[in-house]
Length: 307
Length: 312
Image (cartoon, rainbow over all chains, first blue to last red; front, top):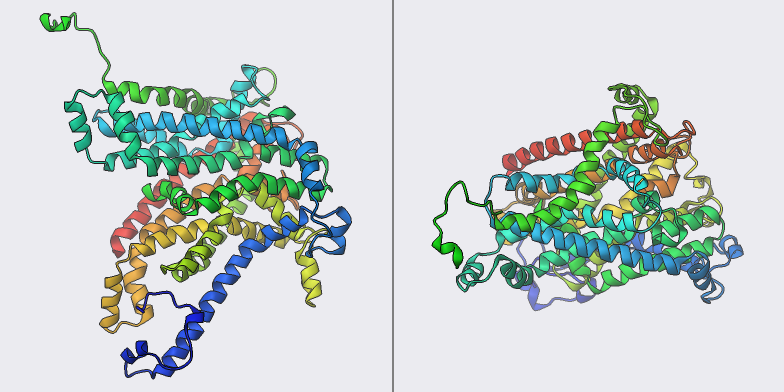
């Protein structure tokens, strides 16, 4: 076992073993082993505490989503009296979550697909051709990352009001499609620039057009970067509250976070339903995350590391 | 091809766009209409006195900017945003860094811990806010009953109504949500430290602490830069989580009012300062924030970039 290997507390048994013949003269095998055991226990203790800090609030909301109102007072952190799904059924119908879920799926999908496509095309143009304006255009796209949404949404709000489009889902879809561009361009230009040009040169010899090279070579080679972009933008669009809150007034156009907040504002004390809605809106991301946690972590950090 | 037989004459030569134009144009068009134009229009709007409703008001020059720079509400919100940034900065460089050091091992259980710690990053701010309201609420909350059940009922309080504790709960929840991001970014930095370098230092008789100080710590400089700049941008324009936790006026009495929430309230007239929305004033606040974010992150990137060079 090398020093960097995982020291499982359970793997350490009392009594000497062959591993410990290599111990130095400064510490006896027993002392060293004891110190290692204490270290392992402390290691797990700290990380279990950190995990509990993350998980307990989620577990308590999950339990709360099954509770009736009196139960919040009688057993605030205990198990619910029954596990029936009436809160979920009611939330799904009464809090309008079924419509909201559809709206969230539509706006997120539209935003992710369109912004990724636009940014991928632009990233190809910016990373494969040298021209004077190239650097400036790239900066223009990436600079969008420091524009606060609070600022840009105000003129957009006025624009969409003048066009008579305010209230529905369309402005949100369009804004997602454009607001996804800065991050996607940042990640994809960085990635494209690193790809070797040999394949493209070969393809160009064979008479392939730029569009063919883009579609047949660049896109398939860029799967990891594209996955990162889809995850990054998909998570924030699915979770966005602010933009939807400002742009959407029509009840049937609300996305999940907006519908949950609207419901919470109207029925302040229907706690069980509010917590059921929170669970419903979080399940898709959490399931996706559990299945692809490595890609999520890589994806959500890709944008920042590339910068 | 037909073209081959013609001698291209400079005057007759038709302008043909380069191929990259077709790749860049779609994104550039969409971005110009829905991003660049609104940003420019914001500059224009900030020079008027306009509520946002009805006909455009009178041009007032820099009056909106002068007013906001002498407004107590603006400075209060700026102070709270700065406190939040500072609190996150301290927590990230102690707790998150510590967790990252602990998690820098390649075992299955480490991946489990890492996945759990990162989980809140993917949960929406609305869900996070409501989750923590359930923990902290004086009526249905969980923290107060737990405290009283373990005999610490003197610590019970109305967390979110208390002028001192309200902002601390915001720190807590903000850190709950974003800790995982800082941990993972620090971990990426730690994994770039070559293992043999550390071993060499150990062989040379360096103590653990010395190895950290002289080998590991310098390699963490890029991660530190990213985390600091990222949280600078995220925190000064934060809205969702704080709005869900403490509402449009930064309850209690503005103690948790931050810039992002202030701008929203002024634009749409829900800030309680006056029932009137003051769109152009809010736009001026947004522009001030924009200039601060752009300038601040540029300065941070430059200063921290120099630091990276200096210590590596």
